[in-house]
Image 1 (cartoon, rainbow, N blue to C red):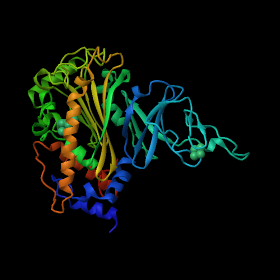
Image 2 (tube, rainbow, N blue to C red):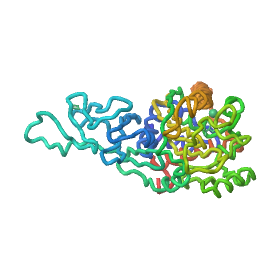
Image 3 (tube, rainbow, N blue to C red):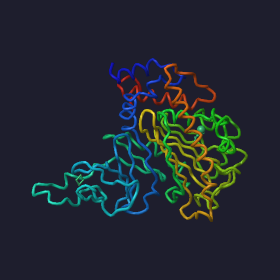
Image 4 (spheres, rainbow, N blue to C red):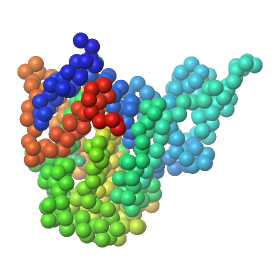
Length: 411
Ligand code: 3BY
Ligand code: FES
Ligand code: FE
């Protein structure tokens, strides 16, 4: 049977409310289908506006087989291109980040303008038409300081995400932030295991002593039940919203992205060991309220985020192989916050550095056990793993529709 039919059959015969059958987590052909059906089609979080300070600033990333460069052009607009030279295909930008007035291919020095047009190609003869050899564009949008790209020729409408996210995130002024620190870790596990782990806090008490000082294990916070019936949550939303900060749980009909502002434990303000702010200078001068907790967003398949009063932590998931996933974490602070004066880097990064490492081990052990021939899908806890059920259902529905099965027309 070909892998498409095999995947469709397994999606249709899967036990709902259970983890997926083994091939979804370990099989190379299923991984390739995940790339084709999800990663090459959906909007992906690439990085932040504030990483592209001036015209010519760029960063690169790799999505499956596609190298991509994201840059700020001469007019200040953010654009993305396939990072593959129109001469003989070499990667044009070879560094992770940099600044350059033009993009020069290292192989034969074909030189591109920041709008992707070919400015210069040496001795290519009379018939050569530079206008036919621009870098190929990649769809690119930026919202509230977050840059998203989409590799599809006909990208899905970005507007629904923008509409949901913008009002929650804009007050935090992340376009005016800077990256205080970033880390990339490679987890030996399938990208869906990274997400399944992220979508529940059933494991938190046993694994995350540092995070648990400030982050509530309540499924109302991590999951997708809404949480409005919890009086503490309702009071938090009312207080934040009266201060002009959208707070209520919101999820898109497709299940692909949600935002919520949740209180931290014991009136903590930040993810530190004490619960006190790690950064003396707040992230945004526009936010006057106190105890705003954490604004949390997820957008499948690439990102989950926490924005606090003093800093933000953003996560980017990138699949490398069936059993390998890169997770990039960035800590954002006000652009004028000074290390050593306004914050200590150790204090700022400690909780999530530990948490990430703990989650890496969890994912790796999970992947290890799933590779056993004795593995079979097991039941999720409806109470604590509602978020995982929602993620797996989202995945199954998208994959099924895109494989030509039943499902929704808007995907
Ligand atoms: O970052 C998150 O959203 C999840 C939720 C619970 C713990 N954590 C890693
Ligand atoms: Fe880029 Fe030749 S491959 S200049
Ligand atoms: Fe965790």
